[in-house]
Figure 1 (cartoon, rainbow, N blue to C red):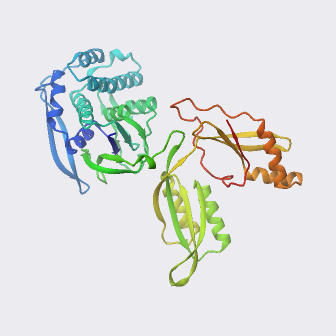
Figure 2: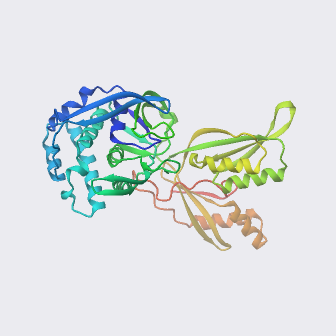
Figure 3: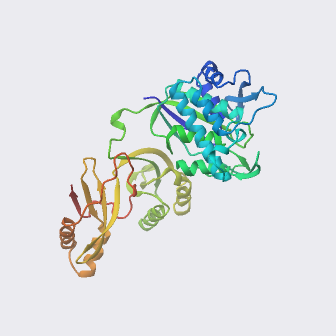
Length: 433
C-alpha cells in the first residue's frame, strides 16, 4: 500500500499541493495530457521555481493564463466536459468528485442551485490545472491512502469575485462541515487566507483521515511553497512513507490513539507537592499521571513523574509543570497506543447507582467494569466491606444488557473515553457475549 502523509502547518492551496508533487518527482508530462483532453492545451503555462521560505527550500508553482478573454462556464457545462473527456476512469472520477464538492459548497454558501454556479467560482483556469494536476500526480505515484494534519484556514477577509468575504472562506467552512474536516487554529498568523477552497476540496476528497501522523518510515519528501511571506516557512510537505509492519499496527476492534509522554525528575518536592502536581496535570487533561523513585546525579534520591496526554494539550500541560514543580525542564516523546472502544453507563443496584465502563472486545464480547471510586463510596455509605459491595454489583451486572455493537466499519459513537478515575484494576469486571 502506498501511504502519503501531508503536513500543512501554514494552510494549503492547490498550487502548493501540485508543487509538492513535482518536488516528489512527478514529471510535468503526467499533467499535460489530461489537461489537453479537457481542451486546455496552449491556454496555460506552468511557472515552477525552486525558492526559499524561512530558510527552507521547496518548489513554488504559478499557473499563468494564456487566454486573452477567459470564458465563464456554468458548472453544468464544466461537469459535462469532464465526464465526456477521454480521461482515465480513475482520474475522471477523482476530478469530478473534487469539482462536485467545490460546486456544491459554493452553491450552499451563495444560496443558489448548484447548476447556476459559474466558471469563475469553481472552474477558473488555475483551479482546473491544480485539480487535474494534483489528482493525476497522486494517481501516478500510486497513492492509496493519504493522511493530513488539520490545516489552519486563516482569518480576516479576502477579495473575491463576490467582493470582500470573511475568512475562513465560506466555501472552505462549508467543505469542512460537509466532510468533517478539522481546521487548525489560525491564532498567531497575520490576517489573510491560508487555506483555499480548491486546496480544501482536494484534501477533503483524497484524505482518509486527519490528525497526527502515525508512526511510519519516510521514503521521499516533496515541499510546496506558498506565495505569501509569513513569519515562518510558508510550506506544505508531502511525504511518501512506508507503514510499520502489521504487528505494530492496530487490528480490527482496536482504536489507534497517539499520546505524548511528558516526564521530569524532581528532587526538591514533598509527597504533598507531588500529589498536588499530579492532580493539576490530570485536571489539565492528562490521561494518566504516575511516579517512580529514581537515583539522580550526585547520588540524590528523586522522583520521576510521568504524564500521558493528547499531543494537542502539550503547551497547556507544560505550563502546569512550570507552575507547580521546581523542574527546569520537561522531556517529551510521542508514543502510539491502541485502545478498545468503550461506552460509559450507569448501573442501578440495590445499594445505589454505580458508574460502569463497557469495553468492546475484538471477538465481539463486551466487558464491564465498575468504577472503583463508586464501589468505595457505597461501602462507606452502607458500612460494608468493598468485597461485599463488589459481589452485589456482580449480581446486578449478571442481569444487565450489553450495549449494541457499532455497525461494521463505523466508529463507536461514544469512543474513545480516555482514562482517569477508575482506571485501576480494582473495580469489578464482567464479560458478556
